[in-house]
Length: 241
Ligand code: ZN
Image (cartoon, rainbow, N blue to C red; front, side):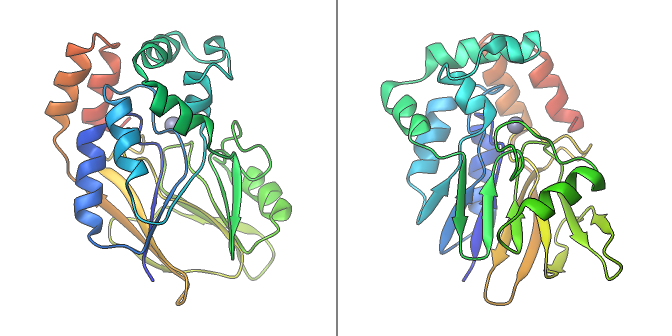
């Protein structure tokens, strides 16, 4: 069984289409939230995700803010501006879909959240200390998270210390007994690699494969300009920052 794990699409349709084409046929799709915010195609991305096979989708902080559940003042001014644009652009059907999403879901071996298992909407897992607290809080062997836009794996080594790995494209990881995985961001990578990031999870053999794919950044930039969204969101796509 191949499960496509993706996160932080951020209304970047070109990146999403490239990921779906590159992943080829999958048995299920697990989406870890932030379908919208920053980018120019929120409705198209929501629609495309809704059509995916055996979809499990989690709500992210940008999704919640676009729905008005979170005040846009909790974000920096440009992100807040993009969220107000998104709120106005979202169709009733997109709003209803995003509003129906849970903040946390457990499937077999895995707890799915956007931020962290402890604080699903907000906490970033950026260091081994925060990862350790979240590994202790898990009721399952694995946590799949997004939010930081960095592909990373936090795991417990033989000495009960938490270590991490920053997987390269096409790196296969034999999943350790207890770990937190982040597939990186589809629509706004921040690890200085501008390619869209995602992962393939194969539960039977407990294998995680990190993937990266080139997409048409210029097309997304042109759409950002046409939508009059902050230009910084177009520029940072080139650097993956
Ligand atoms: Zn995000």
